[in-house]
Image (tube, rainbow, N blue to C red; front, side):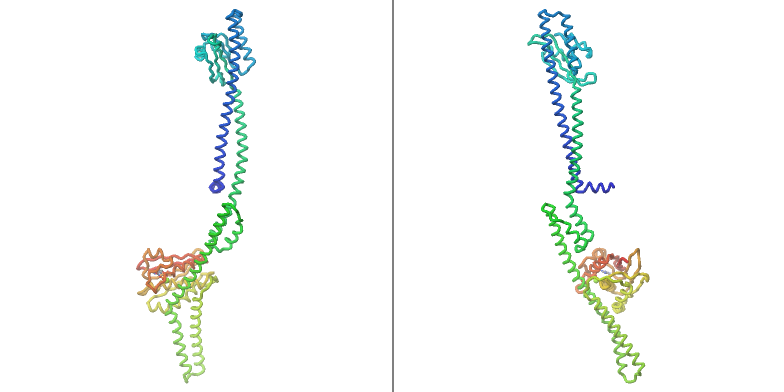
Length: 494
Ligand SMILES: Nc1ncnc2c1ncn2[C@@H]1O[C@H](COP(=O)(O)OP(=O)(O)O)[C@@H](O)[C@H]1O
Ligand SMILES: [Mg+2]
């Protein structure tokens, strides 16, 4: 499952969704953050304004009272009572006011809400008294965020004292929290919808690309550009006017060119193969001549005796039979040769591999006896008929045997073995010839690689052989040591 997931993530579609999701996430997080901080600023500005208005109203009221005191309209006790009443009243009316304190012009506390429990005027009050400037700061009061506003009680340069009030900003925090939840919820819903849309979009976009890649895959699997599978997939590629359509067109054009090149290549290989075949026949010409000559000698002798006078009927019958036998042998050889030299299309039939090799070896009897080469057969009996093109496979064996005979100038032995191994028929040709150095061995299956002189070798034999063996789903390999010998091994599926 993980592998499938990994594969999905690395597909074009997966990457697109991944990148789009990351962008989406980044945008929503940054967007939400910006919106929230702007809202918080607005809320804070609002509450600061409200706090300032409250302080300003209190300042006007309280300085009025101070003027009454200066004018003797109110006495000390009346003032103090009024200040306490004012603080109580204000805190009653505006629940956000957490504490309040009024000092005289020396910073001594005249009145305060009991919650604050501050007797001493602090630095900011003294500062306000000396500079006659209001001051607003944030602080935490009894675990609650409050806005601390300190303002002088003055008219122009006439100063009576200072006013301090703490306005809770809890509502702001609550509103922001509620807003945060709303934003997160909206973002979540939006992200889910966007993701679904993105995946659908990516699927629609990726579909033609996936289809094209499937067609390519198919051609890769079938290997053969002319195969039915590859051809059948093509109508699936609908005409499109976008970039993918262009890609499809280029691909089809490329496929067409590849098919032409492939056809051309196959034709060339056929011609080369036929050429190599003819050259092989030339190489075994003396063997063929010998195989025809042998029965021909017998026939001539029998014929002479037949037309002699003193032969009775029984002898004549025997002579005619012998002549007939000889002619049949010649006919077989010529037929086999004609069959071999024919240019044929691949045609697989059940073939007994042992007798196929035996029939070929007839052509080498003469060359082997002349060069003092022993040909040893070590054939396994249990090999079932193989579904192969006998003509083409003969060409492979013929080429390997000719090479082996050519490599044993001073005599030796060629051992041909057949056997079964793990569902394969293994045919090996082991000679005791001159062998080949590693650099030649590494390239023997390449076309036009030959160590033989002009007119001796074409360098095509083994490359043609490899092509034929692979056409049969088989493998051909070689092992060789200079001065010791060479072994070619062919594995064909049973
Ligand atoms: N049995 C062998 N012993 C030594 N060398 C070999 C043998 N078979 C093939 N070779 C080497 O491989 C080369 C390529 O063989 P092949 O493709 O049949 O072309 P050609 O026989 O026309 O040279 C030969 O030239 C030879 O050098
Ligand atoms: Mg050869």
